[in-house]
Length: 210
Image (cartoon, rainbow, N blue to C red; front, side, top):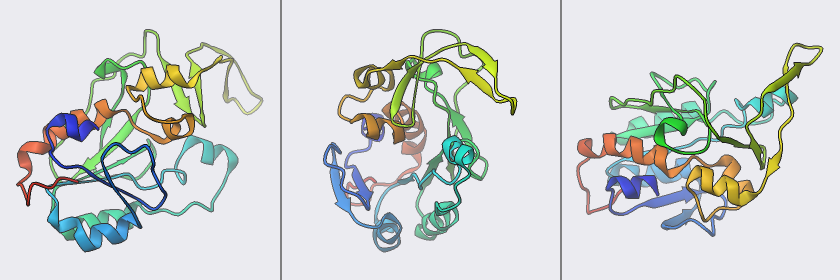
């Protein structure tokens, strides 16, 4: 949605899992294989490899069974010769990535995300997290709350009220997703911000944009 708002004409989404609420053209298949076969025919490509291997929740539980697809994704994107963006969570080893947060974009959610590109990109200024905002992660929506203590391992302790899905939709600017989908999404304002930087460098190829 963000790339559509930024001015890209035709948007095509690709995922190995069905996405019945996706608002644009959707192809269900392996995204890496799709990029290898068809990526060169698009003006630009945005990729969000699975983040679980590097997510905070994964590190807390010490899981090691999630695949690391960042490197293969980057290789496939470079091979297309097209402008590309890779988005992921803080801690993922992206190259020369910029940080985008929802608060400087006027949203009600504090959610930092990294964006790597083969073009020059700028991130947002995020010097303060003051104000009224929520966190959306782990399949829930949580209010902002102060730290109330620390664990025996010196980790912070928060007591946060669980809010409804509608509050999460409003905070992220997404009206069509379920609670579970919100937890893995990035707000359209992020990709609109990135897309407005990306669009001038693209060349129309049969009017298609990915």
